[in-house]
Length: 462
Image 1 (spheres, rainbow, N blue to C red):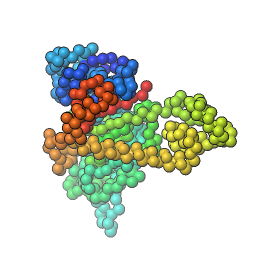
Image 2 (spheres, one colour):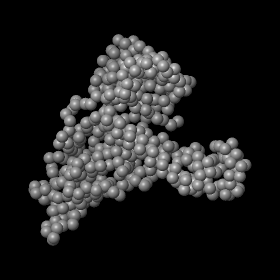
Image 3 (cartoon, rainbow, N blue to C red):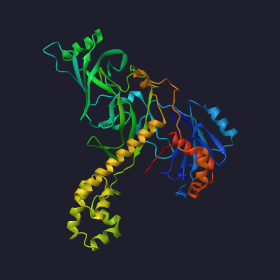
Image 4 (tube, rainbow, N blue to C red):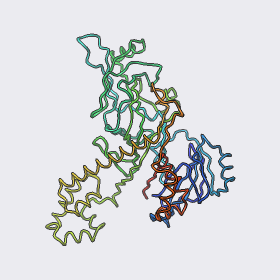
């Protein structure tokens, strides 16, 4: 299928490759000698017949971003460099591209952009007057912008939740606008709080539009509010998978904003209509983010939910435990397994581990907590490292920032090792030589891309 922002040259059939091994680099060396510029993306993967750690990846496709390549220019590059391809698909814009339709699970990219319109939410947008001072005419408002719940069937994201532990306000005071138009200023926040929900309080401005809005609300007009909250890190949840967020379980297909920033809050007649043509954001305005994918599929045939399923999946293990007197009988073993399953929640791998190691219920709970804390720490470290390596500026940042860096003012990523050190490392490692097919240039290019944050790992379930 065609992609909305890239022309694609298929070098080999994606069905020939291990679906879990796809990854992407910007530029590099293919076939040992052919140099690919950074403006061209390379889709790599390991063949199904050669997917061991020592087996090298192979180029499966090349992608040509439309901002740098026309169809004619891309085909000319392929011809000039004698790169043979099976098919070539020009980019094709979609009228409305929705992540809710499901992420690609073969050789397609994991998208890392979304329209700004998809970052406006009114899941729990309650507008009231804040407590006044000494009986004076109340000029203060209070808005509950988000309750921490799951937004069902969002037109773009599918089932959606914003992780309250990862959301923050853009500034100590943020703007309150009318329908997200920066030219229509209603007020500003004087109090901002993120706890079990997102709450702001503030004061109306003295302009005619702000005072008219205040009077309408005072008379009982059911004004709504919406929150502009673009993400920087998104966890995509596939159909059949589930994740925990804000103490709730979100089932895929859907998305979780693990890191996001509240840029502004608006008052409007309607919270947001995805089909409106009078939006403050143009159709071509997008937000960029980092994305990772949750593949914890909760299929009935694979999830171990009972002792009988555990026996079926691990007959030798269960036979040894019961033979050694791990429990005092079948009924006792089932009770132990059920208690461990409750303590470990939906992590059935941890259930198996705790049951096989004879862990107590408290020990199982503690292991579950430690595992979640470790995962959150790793995610936070990864996000911090990505932010250091690559600075991104989105249209909303420019609109609402009073000190944003000018476009093109980029920080250069710095690798931990220079090229000569990488070559020496490659020459001394048989494992690296095997993985990259004795192509030192491919290894150097890959390490550079990785150091600059240009390598994306695409996970897939079968």
